[in-house]
Image (tube, rainbow, N blue to C red; front, side, top):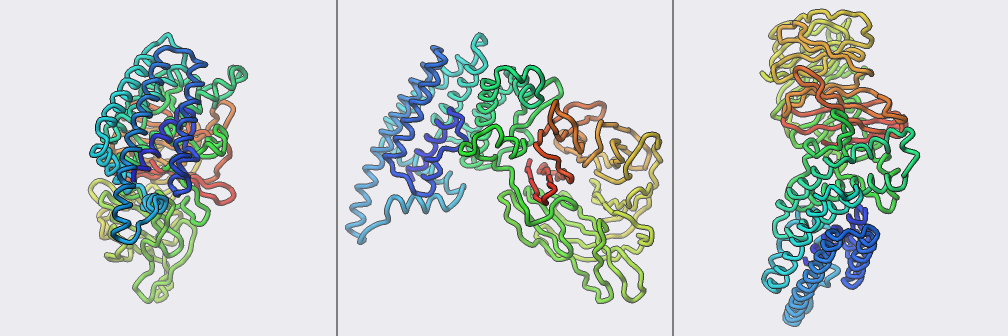
Length: 567
């Protein structure tokens, strides 16, 4: 149980050295490292930090380090005292009960119980320290507080160089985590504040030069790379700490971004895994927990995301649910209960949509063996995948139908659209036709690409796309607004938290390299541009979101490998 505190100490010190996760910590989780070896790793990290600070030669940073080291010593003494008492109790219980489990086995069992039990184990470990060595624990906290305060003074010194101030943020984060082991939520919130202040430093130019290239990129390559690694490793470490010990997943949408200019940003947790691998050595790199790579399931064409942050995707006559860890399971089967309906596998003649309450709607193409005609059938499933009902949508004419898609407005109505058509079918969530809506035709000058329905706003405005243009219509079908972007549009979603449209472009040059681009538009103007640098071209991309907040990017490579980034 006490090993979880040693794990945090090792991880916290490791992030100062740009270690996304230390080897010792990984072994500790598997029960493969002794206390003595772990103590050696901690001391080695402290010495490495001291060496870095000696090179910087800054008084406040050195003072912060001294307090940090003193706090670690006090905390280790408290751990030793608690461990000795536990060993004494184990020996007594072993004599009475015929033996007890080994410490390594206990550590291994704790690690296998998952992230939730890590937080519980930390709480129990702190309680044990309070009971057995409260004075030393209080002394350690006072040292960590002093270390944080000295690091804050260094960070606020604008005369210091950028590497000095980045080091100050690292020391602030480490000190805050170790100071607030009894309240990890406070520690997490403090770290997020430090991260936001870090991103407000002039590091945008560093990232811009690193990713975009140009003449400036030829100079000071090593120091620039070190700064980029420092900032990213700090983001990854805080994300992992929040996920492990704060009791909630990191809010990726609200994560502090790095500003390249007034509107242009980069999001550390949304960087492509392969891009980050180029920055970090393989033995140092641990990808953020919000990214997974899959090759066994197609999630690129028809996918949605529910309020739990799980992806739902269609594959022939089944829908699968995919969680953030990469585990998949069957959500429902999409087979008609009517004997005369034979399923047809026709490319993109299927639509999938979800409402605010996670009710899932599927429209699928069937052949009516009695009449010989083709029909579309609406299937409705609850949030657990239980079928509620199915209905043949006789009002949809299949002879001329192309690609079909649909959205759900805020009244719960399903809006159905066929590719390149200007007519929309509006039905209730039981499949009863309410009206047919004819959209005002947009000027065709310079418009390339198919006309299709993409999203709906919180005002029930209908969002259509074609080529590099977005058309926003009123709920009555009048053209209200046209947005033109530089590249072809891959997807459009509406962010209910900000009331902004988010437009994902297929690809845009980002200096000398490729990049995806998410442009954000308010009611009146473009308010931001998020760049997502990539190493290779992905022919298929998707961006799906849920009204309650969860969202995901999906990239599919030429080799059919899916990369999924959860927001």
